Length: 563
Image (cartoon, rainbow, N blue to C red):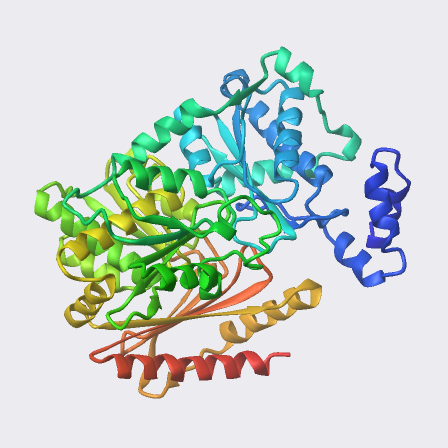
């Protein structure tokens, strides 16, 4: 069915509500907008759903959410009554319609005879992961678009281990969605009936209290400067209460919250793009930090699974740390602390993504700890923790990726901004008591292991034309690699789509040079972007940065040549 027919069907079907039809009528003269909303169905992948909020098959709305949930319900029913009785736990963030989408999801599941646990208020995504394990549910849903702009929302599905679904479950859900012939085939129950039948259960403080206690149990040192001055911003998201609570209960006495970004705001009025990976998100925190002479700035994204930090140097300037740098510092702090205490496991591993830097690998090797690379995404990183539960081959210590996602231990099987905020604060306080900043420690690591530098380039290409151009760019690099760049000569090409890399097939290309510099290129799985990751290693910072610059120039020139 072409996009105009889909549009007209939504306008004329009695199933769709009047507000939806009014929205669609308002774009009747805009063919490009109609096309963008209806040329495709919002695709369900291993990341679930993510898209702009609005009416249409290619948008996040009550109908696409209920369709995905019916597909999930049919999948759970295929596992039998025990799976249905174990049920699904649902959480949601601060975004527009998050609460409504969470409730709609719960009522579709209840109508299918599946028990539901719905959080009583917004919660950080990692707490949802924890709740899946705590409540022993078969699945979990969190309504969030993470760090995307305000006009987006999303729908992520977790499985019984507490981590995001992998391809096997995603394919089952997708096939069940495809088997639903019409939106009117979706089952839904009234809330009152769902609660009275015992199928819908509201959860709150008990799960949160246990989660907070478990997070605090992961602390590594108490011999720290608890008066360290930290400015924290939740960027108007879900991190405000849990992060502040953990830091307070750990004894930190100087946590100052950015007042304009303290409370929930689905419009993210003060920040626009609420991604702490972008240093512009720290504008308010830095202004406050300068005013109070803070040692450290910490920001979590709206669903509090990602965290970034900025450190004040000896001149009083605030220097941002990227995800690779923070990850390497955490690896040094965690392994170093446990090594001193003699409780590093002999079979311990660090798990990172294939597009994450290698400084942490060198650090881990120093402590006799292996590093394992996985595909991008915490479904793969924490998938290793799930695997080790069965094989007993390794003990999962820490997982991270360059896009400011980290998790320590296995109480949560996803990146966790609450755990990571606590560890970053503790780490900075530990080194402060010893007269050093995180910048000092990072410089020491460079001198010991080499100057590892990095650069991420994201090129936004939206719509159908953007998708097609991203495909052509990948084809261009796949067909003909750049053999040499400056003094960097290509020695290895890895095409992760070929499926012979020890990881599932994925549309990622990686090019490794004889200098240990490398770059990778891949389409984003959640945003209309193509991403280029550039890494270098040299004996000096200057030489390492020169390598980055040369590789960037050559790669961008190739991309520009692809029309």
